[in-house]
Length: 354
Image 1 (tube, helix red, strand yellow):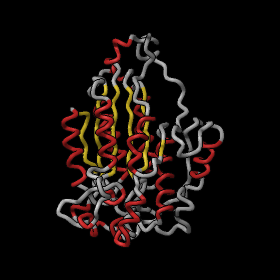
Image 2 (tube, one colour; image 1 turned 90 degrees about the vertical axis):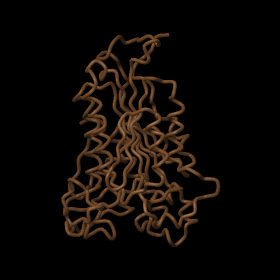
Image 3 (cartoon, helix red, strand yellow; image 1 turned 45 degrees about the vertical axis):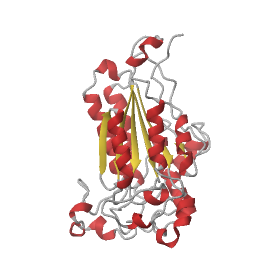
């Protein structure tokens, strides 16, 4: 068994011990939330060219970054400002003084600016509510246009499972357009920015004796509060709340589904002979903004307390990063998000000669 493989039964009984053991035992990983969780062996280029490549050829070693960004209604509170088309709850939320764009937008714009002079770096963007919106690897101007409109287009729900599957599709589409010799020297980096609290979570089995909780997040989660009808009955899903491919009465956004989605991304490496694939996660949640919002925001985190929400979110995002052989970081307030990106390795997949 590899260092990052495991399995669990329907009740998810082995998942927490798996995470804990990976963090503190055989894999030699640092404490969760410190930064890097990866123990992937050193990179080699034996399948992609000479072991030492002149720096003049740097542009021939592509770096493809896929930002997977939560854009649900809750973000107008946890990473303000933001609003939904047609008005609603978010219109009653006053962002902190001086904050004119969400931290997740600032972080991506900063990344684009920092890498503007690297012609081998390209960026795709997956934003998600119930269903993901995708911009495949595109010019910076197209990405900037989407980033500008994103805060005013917050969506219902937060289907993280669907967003991860969309990221896989983006990479697969790019692979199909890329020659095998180029794929072998291409690094794909997926960066997930969000609360780590998927909504809704649906359980196929509504009669388990014990469900997940903040104290036991590794178990199967019951249908999200207020979502029982949506999870189980087709008649309760109006057209704008329909999730293509979801069968009412089945699992959705459970730990097992999230891990499976990440495994699908990681499997592309061996299937297509890629240089490198990683999935990194960063937690985005402003406790100060939630407190300032008051009673009107008491359900914005799914009826969890602030400490509970952060704990569950960190567990979920850590699990994704661990499975994706990447890194997880909780920067605290979203203002620290931009700095937290610096530790993500987006260098070329090779060793350059002096």
